[in-house]
Amino acid sequence: MTVTDSAIEKSTPFARGAQAPLTQASHLPGYVYSSPEIYAAEKEAIFMKDWLCVGRVEEVENPGDYTTLRITDEPVVVARNAAGELHAFANVCAHRGVEVAAGSGNTKEFSCPYHGWLYDLDGKLVGAPYMKEAEGFDPTNCRLKPLQLGTWAGWIFITFNAAPLPLEEHLDPFIRECSFLKMEDARVVDKVVMDLECNWKFAVENSLDIYHVQAVHQATFGNFVNPEGFNFDLWDRGASTVVYKAAPHTPDGKPFFGVMNSLAGKSDESFGVTGYVAPNMHLFGRCENFRPAVHWPLSPTRTRLVYYNLFPKEFLDRPNLEVARETYRNYYMQAIVEDEAMIESLQRGMSSRAYQPGRMSTLEVAIHHAINYYVERMAAYL
Image (cartoon, rainbow, N blue to C red; front, side):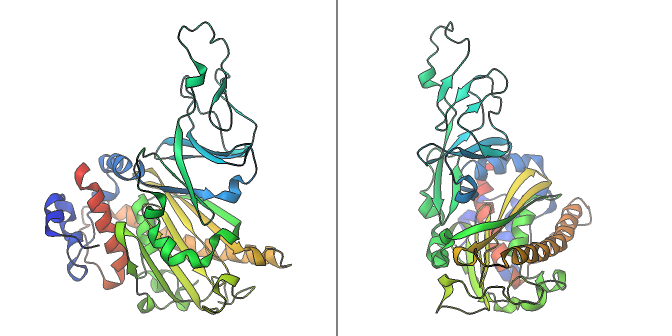
């Protein structure tokens, strides 16, 4: 994506340094990462418009399975109906707005805990006590508000947008560059959810930041990665992908099981892949597993991170699978803690009057690309 002069003219002044060519560019000013007004604008400009990754199909695998989440304060429920079809709804009772589902589980229907209104797994109202006397009330036209839902490679995406881009267009970089990985043939073996005291954009930028790896991750994977080996492909809408050489995410840099079937004849144990699709999905892959991450804004200065560990199905019956899962979890958590300290320090720095946006390194090419797309999206709201 090329940022034109006209796009710069339409943007707000804070973005001009970031919109310069990479070798001349600076980072965004601190208030962009802490302002409640900007956070509110991001909800409307980005999170209410885009397709958003909300999890894996195997997390709601059986009829009646459901899960809930909040997206910038919007409550959502994803459920699989009796026919095996996935649906997403606003988790808001059509009577008084109470959430009809909590957590995750399996159910035959959703019941509002306040007045007992009942909804089936398609979101239709099937019971409303003491409403027969309400003149003109038609239960057939009353339901949980549906949200558009789509899937790709075993991932579930939803959108609040009534007229979004087709999901295939939104995911075009992943579909073209990452479909060969066959994530649809993988399964979740572990999931980590944690909250950080930082703006959501810092979590995104950190995941794209090759510049910090050797300094921050010396005790984990920093010595197994060459920052100069990352030749990012930059795509429309801020997306990026890169295939590179890196060791598996294990303490000794060696795999448990070897090279997954989807890489047979294509790569060896040094395979690494990273991808980003705005606004909140990252893919990290190695020769035997995937470690995708999804980021959710909770407030201007708080973010929820969801990390998955997926193994391909051919490894799921291995006798040492549990040892592998625990080893990967411990290693990931160590790396996450390393990042946590830096990201939260970044957030504290944004409130300092001493902070002025610093110049970008050429290693921050993917960050520069993502920031420019963010500015393009936000220009009409700021």
